[in-house]
Length: 219
Image (cartoon, rainbow, N blue to C red):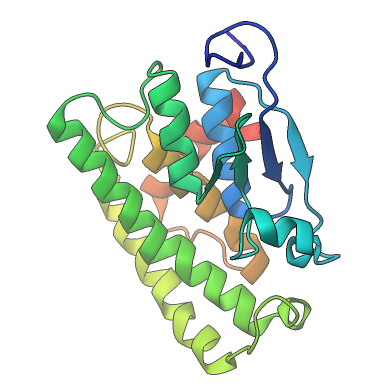
């Protein structure tokens, strides 16, 4: 069910909430997929990173770190950082649950979510931001040596997650969670550094095909 948020935070009339989004970056896509899984619709404001709109005075007042996504609530509260925004919506609408129900589930989801962020998504970003000339205005200073140092980390992470997916359908347990969202976005984002899954990554490829078939993956 798709709903918008009322001023009381309940299903109903539209609330003056805004999600600052961009179509080209991985972290805003994680939030869009999360919202699609929840069936939540939130008005968006598109931020053109190519035109450096994230560095404007207005956006910097919202997020001094000058990054998307940013969620602005109707009372002016600003929530930045991808997982913080997702946790807000998880608390607002607990089902379908994406962060784990039991203490054990929650611990495992958090563990795998962080592993994917730190071991795969972050190195991909570092390769892009430090080796792509088009990123020079966003990553000051660029350090090419750091970009090169992260290339083998990406490949090692792919091997690790491929092994982890042997004999199971989802990365953090027996159902789809936010950890799968982060892994899907990371694997898809590898295209920007021209890395693809190898033939040996059969478990990862099987998993990727399955989660890519979910309607939310188009978000």
